[in-house]
Length: 333
Image (cartoon, rainbow, N blue to C red; front, side, top):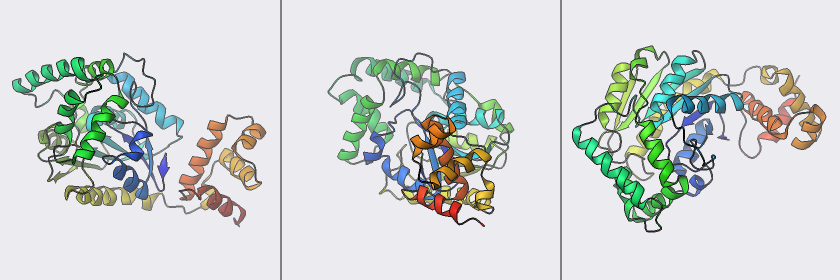
């Protein structure tokens, strides 16, 4: 979790690494800018990044359960959800199966079902991809991984491409990439689109090669009231210095602004639960997280989660969030 403001959960792409992404010339601007307008909650997909690697089940149900677990562990009651890349089916299904939990949905270069809009040429290309993954993914030489990099960010600099080549290996093994890719291709939430009953923004690169623009059109046409923004880009992952990036950022910021307004602190500390008041009160006495955990017979992680909820409700964030929250507590009327 990072940033400040209303919560935004990223059901992000499989090419992620929670720590490595912060040094990324490809991903870092997403993290920084989204953190300015929301409290961003993100996680590595099962089998990828910092998640446990020895996983074989990448099915639709398991991926939905992972999202549910992250949301519950973070203590989120209502939140915005951003589906990126392959996150569309899981996010759509979550919205439909958990009415009232998601405030608004952003679909960013994703789809409702990967098998939609697939041509015979696409199937032949997928066979070639699977062969390249088996033969070259785990090799030190990035020549095979570069094919995927060029499809995702064709307009990138050499520095950005080298970083992406490296991320491929850091994110997952060849076995995981191959099996997760196969199982993700079977996930389809297209039939659920008419049941999505939250404000929805669809942003999609018009000329990208990973997820055809037709997927974006289908999402916008199938979800009641959804709005489609076509981004003039060939990149699946928008780069910081391309014209499409400020358009993406402007649209997403404006779309999430209503959540910021609705969740702005009105009652201050009155909005906190009894347990959150206990935790914040002990923090105000000078106890650190371990001390609070010992006093309340909780785990340190649980204390951290309660404090994150306190920061969200009080509208504070950044390195001084604890000080700001304690100050609010001590100055309450």
